[in-house]
Length: 241
Image 1 (cartoon, one colour):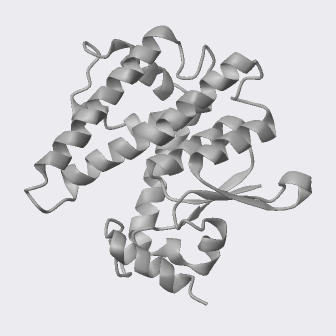
Image 2 (tube, rainbow, N blue to C red):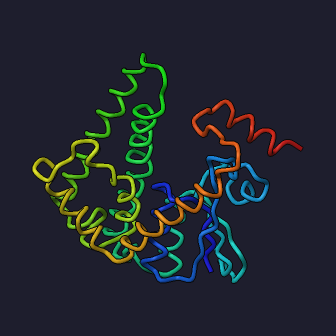
């Protein structure tokens, strides 16, 4: 059994897609970062960085429970556990890992920063930050399009964890003006991703989980996840001894 402690953010969904592709027995345990669940003592044991997702594999290495944080590491762990979606061929394997790391180091952080400054920054004087991250997001879409011009899938000629890692972060491509005319290879790949039954199940579950979590949060005071000073204080308080 894989216990997924998460919410349906892009990083949460990449693990959901992997679990659905593998057909493993798993369950989603809601961790609402908007109400502070990530600072609970229990969650900090699983994820010392107070982030989601995290997992517990009840049948981990040696048959004992094993917990993990960091979505990219979780994908690699599950791929190696099941020997699926991470090629054995060395060239394909390293190609796949390169593009997993590309998503973790570039697509996720840069798309996330662009989204933050576009939608949550209050100070109108932050135009420099908006331009910086929006321009970088467009550049990264061109990197993706170029890659998918030369490769059927993100990592290699096989569907892999690199595709699962990248897809949830690209769902808002229309908001960035990404079209099939200018980014045909990316859109070909994106349509192929959306045609996969596991991805379709993920998308339906993400909506259901989000609605459930929003309803459960109605009576709880919110936490500003973008207030890094407050988040640091909460972590310090939660881990003080």
